Image (cartoon, rainbow, N blue to C red; front, side, top):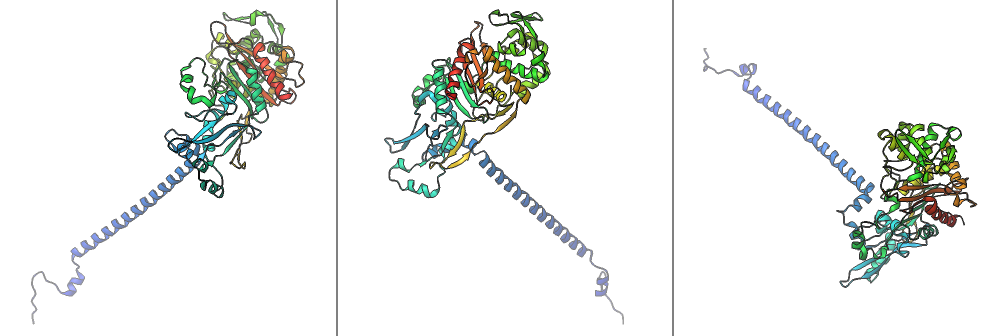
Length: 513
């Protein structure tokens, strides 16, 4: 029997053996789509994890920044949190090193609108003006630098409840934290009184700790009346009353720079104390340039110690030009922190000097006697002096010992911190010997005879074409075991031996008597 079928048709068996190509095409599309979906899921998961990690890192970064840089963020001009804190906390007090003498405090009042007003008080008036500063009008000094600490209250919550339950608005303020400074009231008063009506600066530090015992800048102002006198003080461009001359006043160092010359020479030639010799005729000439000693005084045959003790300009001009190299002097200047950041936390101005390899013969002569373009702050000179007294090692100068809460509990101890060696111990020892000779037989001999054996270096630094000069003294005592370092600058008064040395003498006496 014949079986007929339509053209193009096939049996089931034939279909099984010969699959439809369209079926393969459909399967291929589904497999491709599935692969694409898997790839998309992988990409989504990858980017989700990536963004999660980035977000987590960003959160960590902002949290870390908020913690580590909280003071900087708090002090930012765009951050008004200090104003908000002042409505909740009463600004803490600032105390002298004895933890009893109050240098700045806050009393409260209520204005006509019922708002609590904080009024800052400074019991000693102008005596601590520049170092403690003022809290109003943006602030200055310790008041500005430690604003974060003073405006915060770290009393336990259990103790803050007592203030929350007070009825009067001014009694509800939490008492802020208190600063215990390194300032010694007796030494600060001695410096202030010794300066009298002179304009200038004084800084006294502990050699072995870096604690600043006193800081005085004149002319001064009374921070109790800073708001009333503000416009007048700003208009007074000549006196610069608001300027802290200790940290922000730049002056030619004059003959005190001979300390730097000797440090470099002794590092280059350790035997210079024994071998150096110069015949002073009152004038030194070389390369068509000349330097003369004060009033052309003839010192005769002098060694290094005699040159230093009598501040012989001719001898040091010779040392600058002929005895020290530009490269080693440049290295010494850098190690002594010229043109560099100083290890000091409050605002200051960097000292400046042109490196020897950029100077002419005349420029080197001028630099060797502390003239020309060289300029220093009293703070910087005191650091170098302290390092000499401390065997070459500089301790970081600081103004605060501890931070306390309102109950007197210690929150933070700032401690003494070593910066590092500015010179070798051998060089420092020889510098002590030479600075002692300045007192026993040289330009600071008015300090001789004291039992505490002071050491130092005087300077008279010309600053204009009329030969006007600033008076300098920087030194320490006792020679055998230095305790304090004293640096004095008196503006426009002339010789350091006549003006700065007597001021330093009164300060040394106040400390050791």
